[in-house]
Amino acid sequence: MPTKQPAPTGQKPEPNGIDPALVDRLVRALESIAAQGQQAPTAVTSGIDNHDHHGPRPDPVRSRAARDYDVLRGLLGRADAPLPLRMHRKNEGYDTFVVIDDPIPPAARTAIVESPGDGKSGQLTEHIAIPDNGKGELELDEISADMPISRVELVDCHDALVAFGPSLPVFKS
Image 1 (cartoon, rainbow, N blue to C red):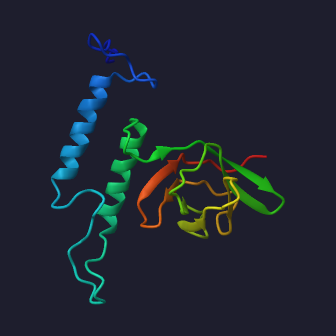
Image 2 (cartoon, rainbow, N blue to C red):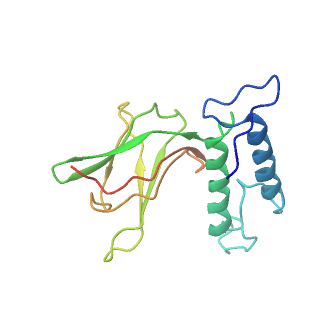
């Protein structure tokens, strides 16, 4: 079992307990992986023209990999990365909500909530406008309280990831 090595002289451990040198090596490795593609991780396309004169269409696999890369950078506390936010679920009668506990970044316009669904529904994705009322309550229409949530992403008006939340288990009252 690997042991945690102390931070090199002059460097203090990050607040999350990760050695800064390890964080830097991990980020360099992630950036190296991202740079191996022909385009930057946030501009991911398949290069196939979709014939509607809007340019190449996004490659969903590479788009997901780019988002995962951004999430890792956010978890490592990089200044220019999306923010990890604390969230929880809440039920009020028949309504199910995802409640964002931390302040929502001002650039966030839409929340994308994904669930593997249940045996009948299959995978579900809901796009929810971020409310202007200052409350971080996202009302779910299709994802019910008995379905887990696998991802919550907040994107800006250009669909760039600005914040993300944890996966949330089935709501328990």
